[in-house]
Image (cartoon, rainbow, N blue to C red; front, side, top):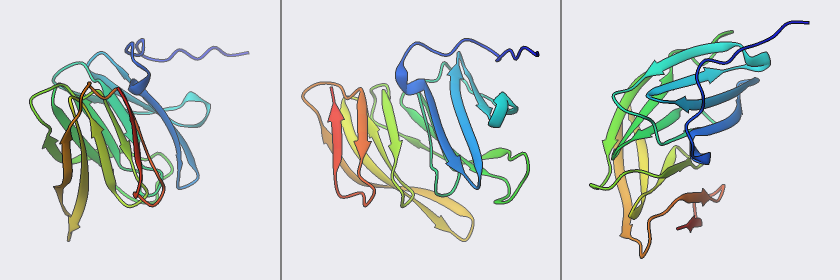
Length: 163
């Protein structure tokens, strides 16, 4: 019998952990302080990404392996270095600045679009221009209460938020 120890205690909110299946890899990502820990099957650590501040939310796009990570009012987007790898690694491809309020949650759609919740609810498209990734704001609306969870439909036509 072997014991596995995971690095770091997950941050306190439910949005700081997520799981997805991409390219036959089961991925689990969680925020621990200012680190993002990415694990694969059998809790094999694939990568640790260090950020400038404590992370508040993370989500994995199961279509292309992109990972969105937030801290303060910033969202960092990481893409897989290669599409087919036994032990994938990620690199930052772009970042976006949300409004001046802290990002509480984020969620990928299946078409490389990202819903972000804070005091505002916004919808971004991450556009690929020949390997240069550019976030484009599609929609933004101030909410009566801060958004703490967001769910997006598969076709990106419906967004549900909880505040």
